[in-house]
Length: 276
Image (cartoon, rainbow, N blue to C red):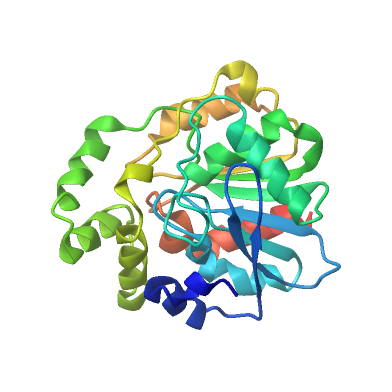
């Protein structure tokens, strides 16, 4: 395992990892990228791409059930709170898509299914648009890149974190969910976000319609009815316009952090889609 696993936040998360895993560092032109791999070696591959401030451990609620059926590759995005190089993701051009392609090459993967949440949804869309033949199925979870951030509400969340205090971050994370997150999980998410360099923060840019319509893979789009980051109705409307054949699911009484807010409903939807 990489020497940096001494980092106490990541080490704590790994101590709770529910299945056996391989910890790999993959060299790409953009950044050395860390991944956690689990599940049968001959199962269909599924890449999980987390949101801003998170890392591969953010999918801990979904890892065990997904690993029964799939070869799960949970990615640490560069520049976030994981073990990948602290390189800021390029906001424009093909850099993000090319990095994803290089990561898949380094892992020996051809066509893959990809599940991306928030910032990870933007990354997944960039990859799926630039390399459509490399995507088997695509799951977008409250994705960035489709509509602008709901700035009035999002800015309202920021005072909770400007003090860089743990209690402020706890309020910030809980405000992104409708249901109360369990104390130990909430503490871990807070520590994860606080471990992300502010200088590497990325707010996804809205992608051009020509880019979005170049995505050809079967799609599942999972939205939350009380998302404070990306407004539901504009997001749903643009998704329907760009991808009329996509399956769009809106989870009720749910905030932006869907995999933590409504983990059971979320898992059922993505498993049914991937297994179909």
